[in-house]
Image (cartoon, rainbow, N blue to C red):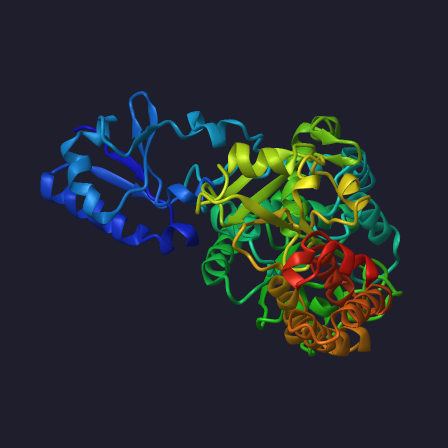
Length: 514
C-alpha cells in the first residue's frame, strides 16, 4: 500500500480569510472521490500573503507550491496530477525558489509555515540555556546585540540583567503580544505558525533572571492565535518543558495566557501590567521601572513576541552568529511586514540595513493600484510618513532615529498618490483621542484639540495661525505626554505637514510664513 501524499493547507488567519478552510475541505472530498490517499496538514503561513491560500504538495522531488488555490480549482489540480507535482496554471514550484522568499534570511521565522504548528520541536535553544549559568545566558543576549523589537529598541540584555540582579521573593516574565499597530501581523503569524519558539524564548528568559511564572498578554482580536498558543502550552506541559521541572532540570516555570480587552494603550508596558493585575489599563509613571518593580510589584522582564522569539536562535547558535546579521547597532533580523496599497504584501524577514525603496519596490512590487507611491508610514499608526527623499535610508534603529523616524515593530504601510495626507494627519489625532487612557493632559486634551485645529487648517479658517497652533500643540504632546501614545502622535502629523503641505492647502510660502 502506497504512503499517503501530504498536502499542506495553511490555517493562518490570513489564509482563512481567503477561504483556506473551503480549499482543505475540497481537497479532502476530491481525494475521497478519486480514491487517492491524501494527508492534509494545516500549517502556518509562509508570509507571502498575496499568494494565499498557498498550498504545498510533498512530492518525490520536494514540496511544490500551487497558488492562490480556490475551492473551484481543486478538481483541475487533481486532473493535472498535482499530487506528483504536475503542471498547472497555479503551479509555482518550490516556495524557497520564489524570489521574494529566496531573498530572506529567516531566523525567527525559519520553521513558520513548514508544518503543523503543534508538531514536535527539538527545544535546542532551551537545552543550550540549561547548560549555562543564568549570568552566561544574559551575557549571550547582551553580546548578540539584540534590541527590543518595539518602539524603544532598548537592549534586551540590559533589561534582563537588571531583573536578574534585583532581589525579590518572586520574579515574572511577561510577553507583550498586544500587537495593535496597523499593518503589523508578525506576532500573530508566529503565535499561529510556531508557538513553541515563543514559549522557548520566554523559558530561556525565566532561566536567565530566576522567574518562575510567565504571562502572555494577547489581544482579543487574535482568537486563532489564542487557541493555538493555549494548545501549545498544554503540549509543552505534557512534554515536561513547562511545569515543575523544565526538561528534567527541577527548575519550575509555567506560562499563563491573558486576553486583552481591545485597548490600544495596553500595548504600552505599564498599562499592560495594570490590565494583567485586573485593573483599568492606565499608564504608570516611571520610575520605578518594571524591571525593578513591575507585575504585582515584583521585578519583571517585559519583551514583545519578536524579541523573545529571537532568543532561542542566539542560545542555539551563539551570540556571534546572530550579531553577524544587521548593521551598526541594529543586529540580527527584523520581520518587516508590508501592507497597505502594495502589490505583494506579506512578512519578509531580512537583516537590518536594506532600504525602504528596496523593500517596497524590490520585494513589494510597488502599489497594487499601479499608481505612484506618495507616502510610506513606518512604525505603526503613530509612526512618521516617510517621503521619497528618505526612502534610501538604511532601515536600522539609529539611522531612522537620527531623522526623527521610528522602525517600531517593522510595520510598513504604503499609500499611493491619491491619499489625502491632511486626512491621514487628522486620523492620527482622532486615533489618539479614542485610544488615550486619559491619565495625562497633553494626550487626553491635545489629541482632541488636534482634530479641531487640522479641520480649521483644511477649511482655511485663519490657516497660518492654525498651522502655528498645530506645531505648538505637537511640541507640547511630544514633551509632556506620559507615554508614547501622546508622545508619538505628533510624528505622523508633523511629517505629513512638513512633507505634504499642499494637502493642507499650503504653498511653500504659506508654510514658511506659518
